[in-house]
Image (cartoon, rainbow, N blue to C red; front, side, top):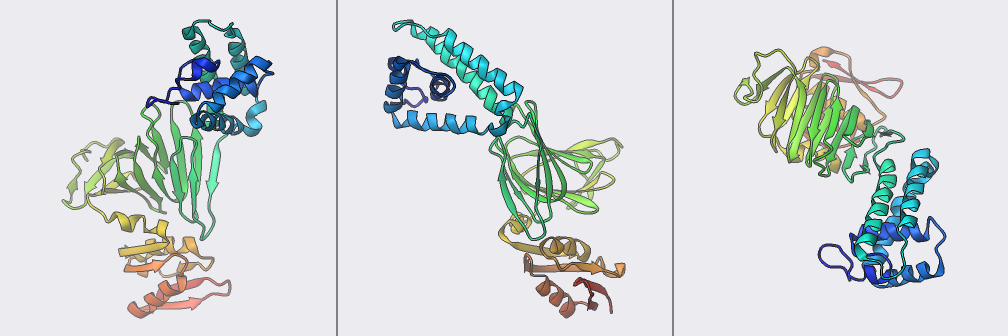
Length: 357
């Protein structure tokens, strides 16, 4: 049985003392999977495993965690941690009746080494990860810390986790981040010259050709690398960032706020935006509200091999409003032809060229 603290009251009766259940499972994994147990140890393990369904579940999780190391299991760092765990386990084998506190220390030691070994893989010590989506492709990934990232079409993301920080680089496109809480390791997203720092939160980052959009849905984030911030509603400098200081600062966001930062580090803060509109792309929709044509086309082009090209820059600032399904370029172009004086021509390569009539 496991009490409400996650401890097993049968542990000490079956060889592993009372302690955290995950540590007990790690202890038994080391005993029966990474070494050659004697018959007595095997029987103690079987008794511990049968004592509770929670024990079996914890042991299965320990096996899964170790298997996650995969091809990294032969790396010198992991081999050394494995040897260390086995040495610690062996050094704490004692006859029955040995005081529980000493054996509890053995379990804690083995558990900590086990977690460190699997943690080396989970933190990405050995390699960085690159995630990329093609035209029309969306993808949801779960990172090593259980943070979840939804990648929009045409997006490239570099992930590098260390013991001190969780580092993400958004090279292009758009991503929605649902960050697992970890106060000791801030979650940092770099997009151009801006760095978004979060703890446990949900936010959207979109890297456009001339600016980056950061929208906060819940929690809190700070956007670094801002030279000047203007409050959009009040048309004056944001209180959080004195505009007269020509040095890179940070702008903190509250839920419902959006920050648009251009290449010069100059930002516009919107106090309240339609959050469902911002993340509509995760549901397969694009919602434009008084959007410049050039920005709308950037988003439309992520979802179709048929690219829309503006050949006449005088129409790039036409303001667009409407709701479109991602990938439905034809409906978007048809709407343009109905409501605006725009000439539409199909090119030999299949692209659609726009210019003023």
